[in-house]
Length: 454
Ligand SMILES: Cc1cc2nc3c(=O)[nH]c(=O)nc-3n(C[C@H](O)[C@H](O)[C@H](O)COP(=O)(O)OP(=O)(O)OC[C@H]3O[C@@H](n4cnc5c(N)ncnc54)[C@H](O)[C@@H]3O)c2cc1C
Image (cartoon, rainbow, N blue to C red; front, side, top):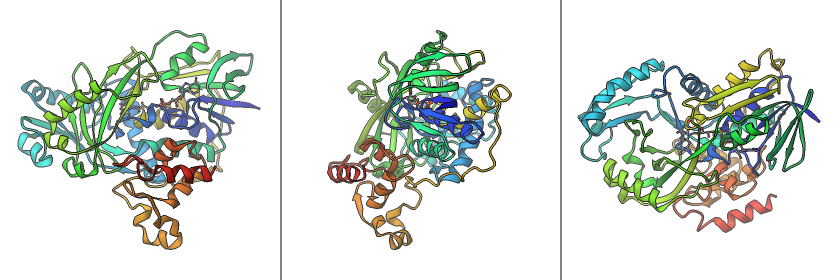
């Protein structure tokens, strides 16, 4: 079969692009190297739905983050992706940072975001009483929100498949032969033929770009390590506490998570290895020291998990989106630290760039967007839902007691449009084994349930 369009990369960006074109007259394939969608950078980030207040004004990233914020907020409401509108507080800890706040407020306005407001030190401590001593003032950013990155990726990919996109997992693209009217992609899962190709390969985008004869950028993985604190810490962090960004980067934040925990991080360290998602003792010590300054009492709470994600950093200060009509090829690269938020807008932008170049029509017969299982702690979960349990007692049978995940949810995930390929995928679809015991109690039962469904 020859597809009209092949999208390489099943992260948030690739899934959003496949979903968009799946809604048209084109036949689309979504190729993912790994056994599951959302198993790359899109699974390990700080999961903040950014307003884009601190982007570089005038960049493509600034425009697409602001647009993505609106698009994803609306899509989340439609599909049940959990979002908590916590707001953020940017805190100044020294006179230099305090002096930088008015400039940040002006920058936010240049990015089209005018809801920030300065707050004095008393107000900072009124909003976050557990902050460490020494805060001099802050800037309130009420729109910043927390979201579930796992459900976002899965909703987009599920929507794409429901719209008729062919999802090809375990298809790592190894080479590309551009012919007169079609391109042959040699992959680890066999050859795939398509008229047009979109490269949304995240950390591998420069390598895929090279397969089309380009050497225009290099991805330098920038590792970000994070610590996750137990749910008992959650009341200490009612809002996202942001540092004042510096030339070195955005810095370390403390944030509530959508699952009812608290996270501290990320670090920012350039590494050579594109698979180096392990955590390190140096990262742990760095975050511990930062945390002691930011919120000493938080460090008395237990750390339930540590993880790391790799930002696809490139030397340009902006996203790299380019259409090469002669090869019928689109590059979507350098989506570093805002791609969760911007994914839907990036897809929209690619759609606009291809209008007229790749003729297509909107379909009138689209299925409704999928309704995703709720993983958010702030919203009703199956074990709390008497009516759901009444209708199906499997929602009353808890398997994972830390995260209160039921047999019904595990069954649903295993029989869903994109079932998990292993335990990690099941974790991202249900929260199972993600709690304070990290699967010590339920791991064997979860494995058995998963295998029984294969
Ligand atoms: C520490 C950290 C914190 C972050 N915090 C936030 C945040 O709070 N808010 C926000 O909006 N963004 C945040 N981000 C950024 C966001 O996570 C990324 O921008 C986004 O996930 C990128 O999505 P993607 O689809 O481009 O890449 P990915 O999710 O990495 O997807 C790319 C996919 O391509 C596949 N692939 C690669 N090569 C090939 C090949 N040859 N053939 C087939 N498939 C291939 C990979 O397996 C992968 O699944 C953060 C990132 C990090 C690391």
